Length: 442
Image (cartoon, rainbow, N blue to C red; front, side, top):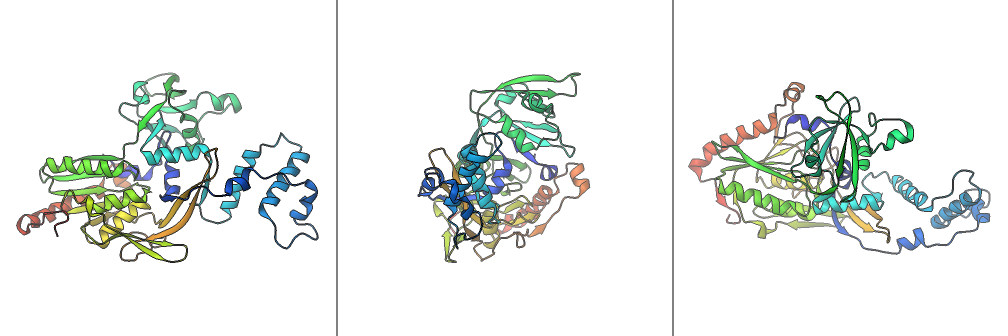
């Protein structure tokens, strides 16, 4: 069961960097290749004698030519820099990241080949790694939060609460440091890797007196995006937790709804807490399963033109029942689209905390044959009623429930409990008012 404590910790899925999910938000479409790669990788070097004009000495041109300036700097470094040899690709990646940082938009960013691969895996719904969730303590220790079923980590007999102190001895050999105090994102990068490759973790376990090594062969691990169950078996209240919006999310949500239907569910809780977003198309499909008609989202492009995206009525394959959507401070982007649409159409009640506040759309533009790409903010979204979702104007719950420190310490999920209480009250009225109705029938 997902507890309130989960929302106060940094939970990382090995080989899947959650922070990148937050930064990604959701993607709208691929822009396709343009002439960018020629400018970045195919232009000849400019003679270093031109450098003085380019970097700002007397008589410089009124307007700098960015590509010329870049190559002049590269050429000058190549000719005069005292340090190690110039790594053109590394310098280019750093230059692009610096250029994008100047925009002040953390969601517009450069993706190197490894980062693009991670994003593609996340979108596809699986990843290459060992299949475990990591957590970081307040004092910087990295330990295993959860082992995924049928994963390489499970086969290697790793356990929850195992502390990781080394990965392949890499850090120890380089600078005599252990994992302790290293950013969790960097630990994830060390552990992730292609299917069939080997990684060795040095583990500390409570019942063992000495650290020991565990060798693991990486494999493809499905991302568990949907968990479902009958939360209240007496009142038949179903529960579906959705972790992200990827290519498989809609089908898995539909399967979970079918299973709960077969068990006689009379009400439903959709848990979007901690969901960082994902694909816009997935959000539209899933949102359409809970809304009869109207719009799911309004997209506003760079020029200010707005286009509404209507409900996909082909998704009306389940019975609509009293619905609660759980949200929290980490409910972001595509999750906010679904929550906002359900709230605007009064298709359900939102319970929990204010959302994250990310109303921006990113598109992915491939750049070159190496696999680099540009994630660029191309639009923003509004809820059907025109709510512009920002860090200052987040999605607010209809019923606010904020866990206290005591709740977190006791691992008491007060938001989920409130959702069950609300639906039990609704079901009492539904028995005499024929609340249940088939989707798409009005």
